[in-house]
Amino acid sequence: MRFIDEVKIEVRAGNGGAGASSFRREKYIPKGGPDGGDGGRGAHVIFTASRDRNTLQELYLRKRIIAENGTKGKGSNCHGRMGKDIEVFVPVGTVIRNEEGELLADLTEDGASAIIAKGGIGGQGNARFATSTNQAPRYSQPGLPGEAGICKLELKMMADVGLVGLPNAGKSTFISSVSNARPKIADYPFTTLAPSLGQVFMDDGDGFVIADIPGLIEGAHEGKGLGHRFLRHVERTRLLLHLVDVAHPEGISIHDQIKEIEGELVGYGESISKKKRFLLLTKMDALDETLREVVMEEAKQYDLPIYPISSVSGEGVTQLLRDVYDEVVKIREYELEHAAEMEKPVTTRLSVPEKEVEPTIYDDEATR
Image 1 (tube, one colour):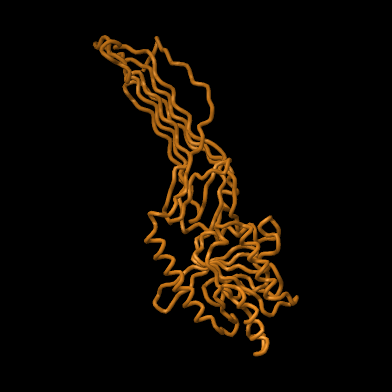
Image 2 (image 1 turned 180 degrees about the vertical axis):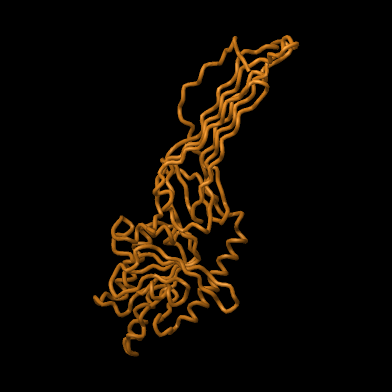
C-alpha cells in the first residue's frame, strides 16, 4: 500500500427534505385541518480519527463523498426520514482544511470526531403554521441545502521524538535498533521514501514514539528532494534528534552537515525550528581515538546536547534513550500543566452552496 499523507476530496452533506402541505381528509371529520409533516434532516459527513488507519489511501481513491438527502414530509403529520450520516475514518493526526486553507478540524486523539459538513435542516410542514387566526395555512417550507466544498486532508504523524538529518545519516539504522520499527536499510542515500513510526520501551514499561522521515537536502523547505513533503510529520513532536554522520562517505564536515539541516529547519518555520534538539554523532565506531577527539571539539561549538553513538555496536545508545525519555516526560508534564494557556486552533466551517430559494408551496388541492 502506498503511503498517502495528502488528499483533496469533495465533501457534500445531504439537503433537507421539504415540508408537506396537506390537510386531513377523512370521512365524518369535516374541516380536519392541516396535517403536513416536516421534511427530514440531510445527512452529516463526519470524520473520525482511528488508530486502525495509517494512511489516507482510501480517500485518495474515493475523491468524492456525497451524503444522503432527507426525505419529504407527508400528510397525517408524517415527518420525512433523516439521511443516514456518513462516518469517514482517518488516521490519528489528520488535519482537515477547506479550499482556502482555513482549519476545519484537527483530529489528534483516537476516537476524536468532527462534523465536517452539516446536513441541511428539513422544511416545516403546514401543520406548524396553524394559528387561531390562520387555521388552514396552505404553505410549507422547502428544505435547506447541506454544507459542501473541497476539503484538503493532511496527515501529521503523532510522535514524541522526530529524527532529522541528511540522507544516509543513519536514521533508519538507529530507529530499527532502538524501537520496533523495521524500515528499509541500505548503504545508499534516500533509502527511506516514507515516514515510519516506532515504539521505544523503557525498563519500567513506559516509553515514547519515535518518527523517522526521509533525509533532507539543501533547499528542502523550498520543495527540493523528498524530506520537505514529510517535515510536517515532525511538527507535532516534542523533541528532535539531529543525526550527523561523522564518517560521511563524501567527506562533508560536521559543521557543514549541521549548518545545512539547521538552515532547513529554520526555513520551514518556527513550528519546527524552536523545538529542543539533541545532536547525535552517529557511526562513532568507525573512528579512532584521535578522530573522535577532533569530532567532539568541532561539535561543541553548537549549543546542543551532544551524544556520540553507534547504532551497530550500541555505544552511547542506552544513556541517550534515558535522557530522551526524561526530556519527553518533562515536556508532557509541562503541556498538562499549561494546557489551558496553550493557544487552540481557530476552526471554521464549509460554506452552504448558493441555491435559488424554492418558492413557497401553495397546494389548494393538497392530498395526503
